[in-house]
Amino acid sequence: MEAYWAAAGARDWAAFAATLADDVVYELPQSRERILGKERYVRFNREHPGARQVRIERIVTDGEGRQAAARTLVTLGSEETHAIHFFTFDEDGRIDGVTDFWPDSCEPPAGREHLVERY
Image (tube, rainbow, N blue to C red; front, side, top):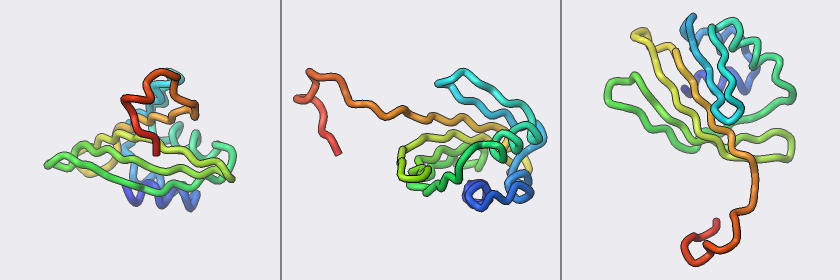
């Protein structure tokens, strides 16, 4: 995962592609989009506007190295947002599945201040 993010940040699409299985599946639940295959997924990232930078804040993996989750801080220009990413890996250690959750910024609804703490 670290090589994946480093290559994406450097916009090194050959190195990025090397982290992926040929049949990788990328999903964005918020927009209900799915991209099938390495070539399309690399192109999707290559054509993404702007130079976003990703800082990994936390990685959690299973004991077998087949699944992982990451929390990241994503910066695009002066905008920052947190995102959650779920990865699966094939038997060769290449990424064969990515599901990204990119939250929209919003204020929480009124009426639950007594239950939550803001940070």
